[in-house]
Image (cartoon, rainbow over the protein chains, first blue to last red):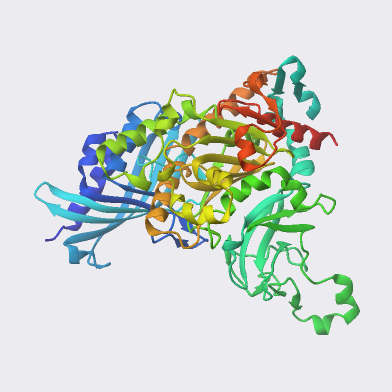
Length: 167
Length: 438
């Protein structure tokens, strides 16, 4: 099973499009039912947490957790999330890495990328943060599905909320 | 500059307790807070588990002073100003790390982890021995450094009363967190630092504010409740969060205390205490402590707010939070998850997931708190004579201990039944005004 660099890039752009255009159902459909969404926390100046059962992550969620995030946004009852900011994801340097981290053993394809997100809300103005993505994708009859998305957030003095729509 | 005492309208005999909103926004007052509170008061530095070995250090600030805490070769923990004795360069290169020898990156002077200067590069040729004595080459320790049950505190004022006296009535409540584990507590890996565009005192109030929970965190409760419907059975046992109590209309056994020195307690009985990650320790704890204390540890959620900028929060999970003023309108906040050493893996996992749900800037709760406090700061600039009335609950305020405090064997200055009261804030504001007026 292979995924071409062009297919991988388009898939990542589609996820970014869904988030920036608030197409939440389409966004959730990109995730496999057994998906893990993981943003590790920093350790010191150079390290990251790597054991979600013993270390604290910024976010570590299953698909129900992602659906709950959308419920939170759509409920318009979260002060931090209403009004919603405008976001623009820039996804770049998409690299199909095959079995780089041994994920192919499970029939998965590893894809790495770089991201910047500009988020604007009137009360705070524009914020920009950035980092790296590590995806593990599974090829299915409906196209690729995200089995794991690991998001390294490089800012360690965080201004404004962090949520699925702005990283 | 506004005078602090004039900003507090403390006439409780007339059922009035008000704070002028200039207390949050006055820039000149902020300078006075730095000198009279943050440079005179004991402040939280960290936990001993963060520096387990010789040379382990954490770099932080006490008010405006850069300082670092380091474990020496003798096993002792000390705190020094983070500045080379030579020409003041910051010595530590990282927020945390290990350095048995600290080498100044500027001119190469060296210091051991006990603070002794071990090398003045080229000094033998350039100085007489008497010069080095005169220079005082060793690192300067901060005026006072102390530990209470693993929690490390520092104070840059030599004249401040001892740490034990300062913590005073807060100690039995700190014990409820510190004593939960037979092998002691540890800080878990994973950092979080975030910025709030609001005055630091909004965070002090918010940390002990039971009144905002049903509004600001209603969304947390409904979101977690919704998530549980998606994973039937998946959030049972310790994974279950007691969020439904946030929405409960039933009267919950709860209260607030003034325990002196500006320290404030807010508590509420847990609806489902066996879902707490420390519940498995119960039998061991009952062998060691009075049933009343164990009840407080495991069956009551607590916020312990230590003057001026520390929160020990033991509700669904266990969190240490500090908030450092940057300016009158900007505050830097840092949090850590604290857990029993050697904790059962299921309990550890449940504790961490619940911590991530609530206590991070990426969580389902803290972002809403931050926006609420930022909104309060913005609104406080709107009126040049706006007053916050904090008398909510004064009707039920009683001197001394309530029944719950008696179960712990403590006597707060005053008690108030119910979590939706603002009377604990009196403790903070009275201490604040006292310190700024002295």
